[in-house]
Length: 173
Image (cartoon, rainbow, N blue to C red):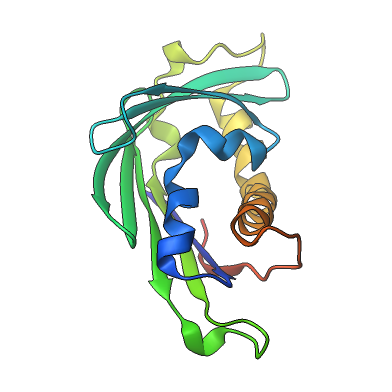
């Protein structure tokens, strides 16, 4: 299993941050590769999200299910088809890291554990002469760039303005 664990600071309280990380339907604004989110449920535990992803000549719909919510600190999820993956958005107060002109700060963690080779090869339509191994080899190095884009846009949404954000990489494959 591979793991991605990243974090960044948002200059807001966990109570202000959490609705943003919980709102999967808004994620299309944070990444260039997520084209659509179809919501099945009310956003609480048990809700399912179809995440329509597109990259290069590939389109894939991931199905993610919310497995646990402990507001305003944690939202856990898992993929329910094709790929073995699970993760958590975690928000922890970190007021000591706020700059002098901000009243508080929270650290936002994205933690995902996955097996890139667990993909059901029959569920992914690959172009002729393209193997799943080839795709994995090209996608994994791009995950960090994608994570930086998502974090930058998420923090801008939370704070209502764009700024340079620092992405802390705790663990990467």
